[in-house]
Image 1 (cartoon, one colour):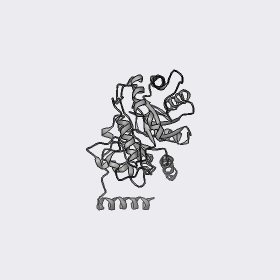
Image 2 (spheres, helix red, strand yellow):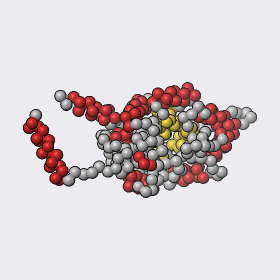
Image 3 (cartoon, rainbow, N blue to C red):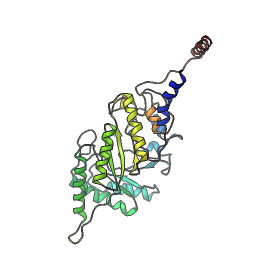
Image 4 (tube, one colour):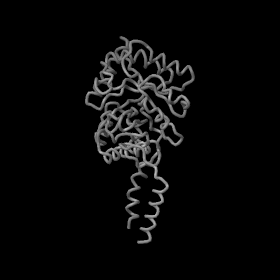
Length: 312
């Protein structure tokens, strides 16, 4: 009578273990646990690309070729020169195949890592640092605003300012972009609605969900959100790529102890393993290392199991 219950408990893990070429890594390493960095590029990992909020690749992945784990540069915030353009062009000239770049990180916010840039200033920086990369075949991602109602209006103002900078009296021009980046922290219904709002504001434009999670929830709710959102992203043709924000240990998390890919000993949680396309581990995000059974403990366990079988 217990076998059907066992099958039911296994089913969610089987559903969650899927593979997708869209999945990438938001790389936020902890210098106190550098051993965790190699988890994301293990041979069984499903991840194909990453970004690190910087314009240059992370040294942790120096031994991994660009065509196996694509680095996507980001211009995080305001700069007063052309250092981003110079850096990306130097990488391309040096042989790194840079195919995409990301714009500013949450420029509509001064909180929680937002770059807090006025649209007019952002447009000026874009024209000098990002727009020229289009001529080299690089695809450009619009700045990733927060999930607040102010995000889309910020982008619309930014694009208007950008157009004014490159237009002439005789010809109106628009700045180039190939995809729009979204951030979302909240439930699945809110995520789907947010994506719909972006689809209406930017019709027929590919979406990258470059930060998302359901923060500060219990484990079951967090896992359900992961399963629903990843399945949704994978079947939506409008979604080009996505990257779950959670590639850290539970104690390092600013999105709650359960919304993470690693437990406090650097072991993959269920969400972490599912995201990499691996079978679930059953590891509690807030746990430490599993204790290995000693031989005598294993023997006692086996004896008890045999005894129960005989009694039945």
